Amino acid sequence: MAAGPTLWDALEARLGPYAPFAAEVEGETSGQGLRLELVKAVSDGYTARVYYTLTDETGDRLNGHTHVSGRLEVDGEGLTGSGGSQVVSYDAESRTLLLEASAKGLDTSQAVTLELTGVDPGERYIQDARFQPPAEARALDTDTTGEGAVVLSPGQTPQTSPDTADFTISSMGFDGQGRFHIRLAMAEGFDAGWLLAVPYDAAGEQMGSTLERTAVDGGMDYVIGGVAPDDVADMASIRVYGAYRGPEAAIEGEWSLPVELEPAEQRVIPVGRTLKDGFYVERIEVSGMNIAVYYRGGDKSWFVVWATDKNGVRTGVPMGMMSAGAEDGLNLGLWSFETPAALDELASVTLLGETFPLE
Image (cartoon, rainbow, N blue to C red):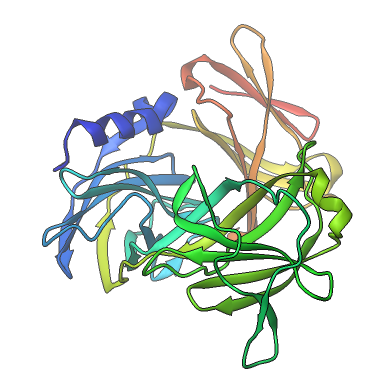
């Protein structure tokens, strides 16, 4: 990987107990001044997580909140259970993002491709920016927009938040009709997007709900329903959260790389008969990450799977996904271990009233 130890550390932390299953993958391509490079992949034939880097070769356009539109594809189609691409870490010194693309319901007998269709450094999301509530219930000056919406005039109760410099509260109080408003002012070049602003009480409960959002010069005005002047004394904080945009421009382009996945060791248990509740099970495939059951029919929409190790310890394996029409009219059910299991230490799998030893 072209980036330094910071991204290597982030990758190892992300892999955690899956590190023994990770295999190096190779491939790189460039376009629009960005270099896409494959790093590692974790796969067992049913799920895949591909780690890759994106490096800006021409400047500092990338950042830690860059949104990358990318996914794993087979024959040009997105895979079942595709998790898209997620940023793992960003190294400012090397101008490099480390990302993960994931998918479930994977068939490694087919060619898999990593496809990126856009990179947007301007997209942002904040979970919890807190402001102080009003000191008292006040009626504030208002303006009327060209569309007839009543909004607070700017700059009447300004305050900042320790949680962000991207926006501030410009005005907060009641209009002449007794409606409670919060007006945000965005930093230069920022857009409020889908931000929401709502009051909370001391117990952490939201007070009221957003009735109106009105774009105003430099920000957004919110009308909060269900809040009366007498409620101001119960306010403990104002929470602002949601998606919004920064000044960075989106990078248009497409990047594509084939990914050669090396699946982890698997054990196959042939079944080929109907079990409890009318489920016909063709076979069971077990890896240290998942238990895959190929089946059809059945009187229920799901069933429970257990794994027992050679010490006799029995563990319920959580269902990951079920996909219809996986192969020859069969469905694929995928149960994923919460932490990877050592395949050599597993003794049997139990489902639909029967136990199947791993030989």
